[in-house]
Image (tube, rainbow, N blue to C red; front, top):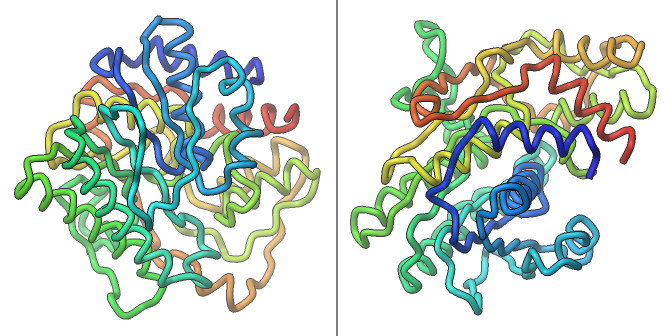
Length: 345
């Protein structure tokens, strides 16, 4: 636990309340991923500093990797780790009050090489967890969707609110990701209607931070690895795409706020309005932080196939902020922290 990261966890907890989750058991799928890992860290710190008595069950596919990541929590008996593939039916020995479903292929290389698994994994995985929730009287299931569900805008709006619907090419295999997320969102709404299980959906923008995984092929993850290796940033486009970003600690508190206070069958955007930036400027921020430069290079065909074709993707997070969520780390602070923390790791 890096000192910078630990301080940020404490700051985030002190500025965001989710007391509704105290004295409960929360199952997190995809717990060793970028977002899931940070949620685990937040909840462990809530228990330590607030005596929240939140039991956490971390569901992962790679058990050995997760044992290494969470070894401190496991050794102290604070975390239960289970190996589970969301394509299979779930079985957990203890009573689960809440589910945070954060397991999904979420990086471009997977979209171009495993589009079927990406699509089916979202849909079947969500169905299996909803079925478990019904059978075991789970209070609420939170589904981690994506800002990609908005597709291309019509050029008439500044930012996507939760009601917006843009264009997505159904026949493009790259659409496996947003279409899978959309289908799973609809499934949550349908199960809420037909079976009275409470669900809530979050739509994160582009998330980054010190919990990035080695396999993450997203642009920002690649740039950060370049910086850590003291290399120039290799940018494989002109970088004109305009995106919303959010530091992972802020994203994690946003998810917990939505789980605690979000309305049934509602969706909530997660984005920091102080972190809207082009890919080019984001690359320059990362490069400048380590005294390197940005170099334009031609992408391979398989890399190009995984790219998000949407030029502008700005999310309006007012609805989540109205629940009391407060993001703390803008792009400059977030990038600086990410690199400093990963250098020590």
